[in-house]
Structures are given as C-alpha cells and as structure tokens.
Length: 352
Length: 265
Ligand SMILES: Nc1ncnc2c1ncn2[C@@H]1O[C@H](COP(=O)(O)OP(=O)(O)OP(=O)(O)O)[C@@H](O)[C@H]1O
Ligand SMILES: [Mg+2]
Image (cartoon, rainbow over all chains, first blue to last red; front, side, top):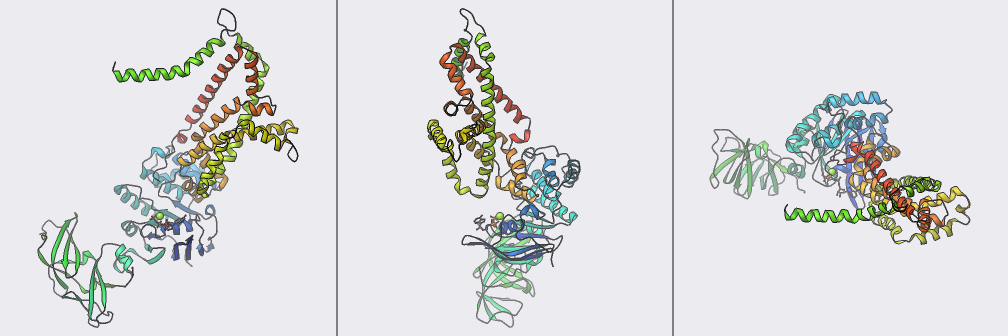
C-alpha cells in the first residue's frame, strides 16, 4: 500500500466535472507535480487532498488511514498557497509558530522551533518582522516554513511561485527541492509551468480537462508522451501529416519525400501524424538518417539555442541548434537539408 | 504667494470655520453663566449633578454591550457569508440598510408591542428592559457595524486565510478569534465608534423604555436650563475626542493590524 493512495477521485461542480477518475499512488518522500493547462482541475484535485473540497466520489488514504471525509484541520497535511496567505496580524515567528501552539507546544518551545525553521529557509533575522515588511519571495519562504513547522505527512503547494518574478522563481524552486529532499517529505506540487514541473519532480502527473493523461518521471513524459495532448503540452513539437507506404518496413511519405521509421506501423495507405522534437533535428544531410529537403522560413536566435524553421512538403519543422561561436546561420529563403534518426520520430495517436 | 495657494488656503479656512465657529460660540456661551464675566459655573453645575455621571456611565455601559453583542452577532455572520454564501451578500446589504429607512419611533412601538406582553414580557424587569434596549440599539447600529465588518472582510483574503489556518490544525473558534477578528480590528473602529456616539445621544427609544440614559437627560437639560446644555455639549464633545484618541492609540500599538496586504490575489 502506497503512502498516499488516491482512488478514482471525482469532483462535480453542478453539471461540470472538474476532476474525473483521478487515480494516483504517491510514495513516502516522493515529489509529484500536477501539470496541466488552466482549468484542467489541478487545484480542485489538490484541494480534495487537503480537505477543502469534498469529493463527489472516490477515496483518499494517507498512511493506511481513510481521510476522504476528514476535516482539513485533522489531516496533518501542510499547504502553501499562491497568495502566501500569511496572517497579517502576526509576526513571522508567530506565523511559523501558529500551528505548533495549536498542537499544544509551549510558547518557548514554539519560538525555538520557529527559529530553526527560519534558519532552514534562510531568513533567521526576520522572526520579528511583519509579513508586509517582506518581499514576495520572502513571504512565500515563510509560508513554506509555516506549513513545514507542524511536520505534516504531506506537503501541498498550489502554484507557489507564480506570483514571483522569473529570477526569484528559479531560485526558490531550487530551494523548495532542497528542503523537500532534506526533510524527505511527500510533496504534491501544482503548476502550469512545465519547466518547473520537469526540474522539480520525481514524477509528473499531466492533466487535461479533469482527466489524467499520463503519470511518469519527467524524462519519460517528455520523451515518451503517451497521448497527443502530452506531446503537445510538454515541450515543443513538430508534427507532420504523413501517409503509410510500407508498414512492415516503416516507410511513410511526407508529400514527395520518404521517411523511414521504426516499425511496426498502421496499415498501408493510412494517414497518420508524425511527431519529432526540434532538438532531434540537425542541419545538413547525414548517412543513415532521414534527410528532408526544404526552404528556410526564419531563423530565431534565442541565446543558447538557435531555432531554424524549415518548410518541407506540407509541414513546417523547427530545428533547435545549440549556439556556437563558429556556427554559420542559414538565411531565410535558402534551400537546406535537415535530418533526424529513425528512432527520434513517433506516430501520434489520433485524438485531441 | 501664488494664486493657487491662496485659493487652497481660503477653502481650508472656510472648512475649518464651518466646524469651528459653532463650537467656539457654544464654548463662549457656556462660559457666561455668571453675568458680566467668564466663569466655569455652568461646568461646575453639570459636573456636580449626580445625574450627569450616572446617566453618562449607564449609557456608556449600554453602548459597550451593544457593540459587544453586535460584534458577536455580525462578525461570524458576515464571515460565513463571505466564506460560504457570497451569493446572498445583496440580501445582507438590504437587511443592513433597513434601520436607515425605519424611523426610531416605529421601531420602538413595534418592539414594545411585541416584547412587553407575554410570552416575552421583557419590560417587566429592569434587567430584561435593558436587554431590550441593547437589542434595539443593535438594530440601529446594524448599518454601521455591518458596513465596517464587510469592508474589513473584503480587505483580507478571508477564504485563503481560513484555509491556511485550517491546514495548520485550527478549528472555527481559533480561526475567528485569532485570525479573522484581529485582522478586522482597524476596519471595526469606525463602526464601533459610530455605534458609541449613536447610543450616547439616542433619545426616542431610551425615553419610551424609561431607562436613565444620557440622551433623555441631555434633552431635559436643554428644556430647563440655559448655560448648562452648552457646557454639557462641550463636555461630551471633549469625551468623544478623547475616546477617538484612545482608539487610535490602541490600534497604533499593534503595527501588524494597520497593514492588511497579503500579496497578490
Ligand atoms: N467552487 C467551484 N464552483 C464551480 N466550479 C468550479 C469551482 N472550482 C473550480 N471550478 C471549475 O472546475 C474546473 C477546474 O478548476 P481548477 O481550479 O481545479 O483548475 P486549475 O487546473 O487549478 O486551473 P488554474 O491553472 O487556472 O489554476 C474549472 O472549470 C473551474 O471553473
Ligand atoms: Mg489552480
């Protein structure tokens, strides 16, 4: 039995199902992200685990205990909110000590423990400050310390970084991961930022329209997306409408050009959609690879990456090249060949 | 001096004069109790009148009870509406507005008709009459109290703060008492202050229920004396200001309660 077992969770708001068939097992100490577009039900799923929302059906077991209908204040689950939600009338130390005093700790012990936590989030001198005297990033650190103070069995975070600016976000997310690993605390993290989900998580749950599309480690989600939605939502994707020519040999046709894939494929003559990541494409011809001729549409210099868009029979493909000082960039309108190995492309299943 | 500055000062001056002249006139009049010279005779009369102290303290007591019960009734109610029933807010606004359009005389007749006979018969005892008085004033104070509580709730993110407290293990009494209420303190000041002033000066209900309130005492004084009512006005004015200062001081001592920003919503 997993540490946190979520079985067939379903939540209906009126006629609208916000979460359907949510079924995930989380191991002790695991960092799991819920990733998906706005409105896909991430927050609703998290709020059911926290106890703020009652599931229409399904169960939640924590450490063998059925907590499905337990009130939130008895679940031992910590929560960090997007808007920080620090108590404005209390100092930082009192905010962190709030849950400890409720657990019956003496004020002196609570103060000492709050001090330790402020040490952990690297704000040891801010205990006497009020929330409004802190920056957004500092406030969110305090909110994290406050949630961790009660030593919850599970930590939930709902887009904790989306109100912060880019630099602080990257800093703080590394900080969250460090603390999570140090305390070995089971964590569920909601985000719509795929980079955040990829860089932080042991496993990612990709959601769409209330359903789970795929659960897996970031590497697997990115490289072996199981649905068209996941493939499109996570990372950049080139898609090509192709026709199967010889299924046994893995041969398909993109307009006039031929592409060899790893068999098996669907029946001959069928139209399918082929996908390949931009970073798998290279400029120039290569022996044993699929070589496609096309015209350069545009060249975008993005810093460490140069994105070259090439129009090939009926599809526009992006190739991401690593920047080098010696690189000669092609020009728009130039005829080029691009190549990718057979294993880099895959057939997208029909849907969404 | 620049023209703009001149006109600004003129308007400020007019504004001050509008409030200050009647006050100064009252003050001046109150000092003329003895013919031909200024004296504090009127003040001496007022302050030595045992009825002054007794009615003032009785009214103040009733006012404090009114504020206390109003808060106990309104804060949890408005909190719950904000948290769980935001769609009935318009209905709440309407109810809270009613005392404005209902004349006090109508209110007091209604109250007496219903509560002075069985099964309630509240006017049979002094303590229960006082209770009725407090209840009536809670009605009068409702618009002000509701408004200030509602404004206060809107300034904080009630729902998220509640959920944060819940996830830390807090039950309802702790949430209301230690998180919601303290963050409303500044917003509540205007409501409590207005309530205090209303109860102190209220005449109609107090006289019909025949309790020794300050309002009827003041009115009686105005009818029978010349200089003393003026002195009394100045005294209540000073007491009012002293109270305001006191409240200011109380809120200033708690820095967290004057700032309620909780970051982006
Ligand atoms: N209290 C509610 N009443 C009615 N509908 C709701 C309620 N809460 C959420 N919904 C609906 O449920 C769906 C899922 O919402 P949810 O907040 O879980 O999405 P989300 O994935 O967290 O989106 P975002 O990234 O924008 O925060 C949405 O269509 C939303 O409108
Ligand atoms: Mg959300």
